[in-house]
Figure: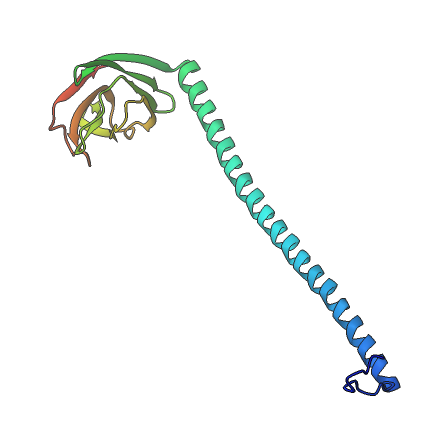
Length: 192
């Protein structure tokens, strides 16, 4: 009844080895996909582990750097503020119509100064504040301080060599790169 047009092919029985080849082929394809998926998952997990290892290494290095910096700051603050050889000098200043101050913690034992500048007006683009040591041999530059923002500035300074005795401090407004001797307007000049 199915061959009513007479176009149906006569059914044949397949060869016995054909069935085995078809089944082997179907099973082989199924085995390749899980293997490829496992490889992709392994690569993804390995890449994630490598990224995590690098990120943890970077963060550990940053943390260690911050710990060292905090330790140095704690040492500096405890040495300068609480040290018996520390002298506190506070100098009122006026810049750009603003009243501020420069505070110097002078440690005569370690020959260092901790300087804090508060309330100074930000510099013009081509200018900077320059701090000077007044020594028995003349003026010696201590630091060039470009202040671009309206924020306090704190810095630690090494005093000049032992053959120069520091007798005071001064601050002037100089070109952005600093100068060899004071040439701009003086913010303060103070003998200690």
